[in-house]
Length: 448
Image: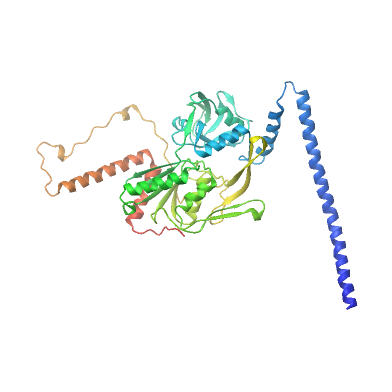
């Protein structure tokens, strides 16, 4: 027993010595790292004092410090930034659904301002700004080298004032100027309508109004159709939707899923990860869904598309999405400012990250670019005559008036569908898919 006790004590002593020998270099390394950090902070203080004392013009110390903070954040990734008190207030207004500006969501790429997407019904949309455009100058002043917030500030101004933005577009040889009149942006988060027998839900952004708008709009369209049995399915149009609030993306996904994971987020610390699951209840009542996306579909839009795609609840149609797979947390700071910091990546239910890759559609459908109309095409082509136009032609005596009326209504719907293919080929394609699925009967698509 005595020998056993000696062995135990000896083992503990050896363990203590080993731990002490290991801890020594680690503590020294940590102390050296801290010393380096303090040296760098001293360097920052020296530079700040030198600028304040020796710069050729007087400087605003507050602006100088804010610029340093913003530089530190923007060096991390394109979506982290410092928000002054005014910017933080503007962001809160924007997420509530009404704000002033041009109506474009932008990011930064290679020093230039890149349009993620124009928002429906805004001055930028009316002026023809497209997803993927690069803004290289504002009112003749280059934006190269500016932070994203500084470039956005240049584009802000009084409602009703004009701004000239210089655009570089992939298919254009030369840059060109676009005039835009600033306006108050009032976003309707979801616009609902019926095309043929398909309910189209056009989701323009994910703000506090999105899920209520979607729910109410869908219910009204189903009611107007006389019941869900008269609906072929739903087109969820997320094209040029730049994203927004994470919780709204979860609500919209949950609206069409009965169970299963919607999205997960993972930060640097594994314990900070979160999973969000769907609850029972499908607003579409099992009807097939087609999700439309394009290169302007980002962030929250990609969460919805990815969740419905992974659960095989929807067919995703269009072109590859933007590929923003990170989560930003807005941290309030003293002085009413805030810090927007990238804190996590998000993952679709299958565990894939779409960061820089985007969501790939199940069916790739390009939207044809508008073709310029020639002078000869502007003239309305003459209508071809038919048997019914001939003088003295016989009437059709095999059909009742109701049957003739039904034929005329079917013809009008076919003509409207043909016109839709001219106006919006991707949407017409999505509606054709729903028609086909409805003709086959109960679909194999369904919530897991």
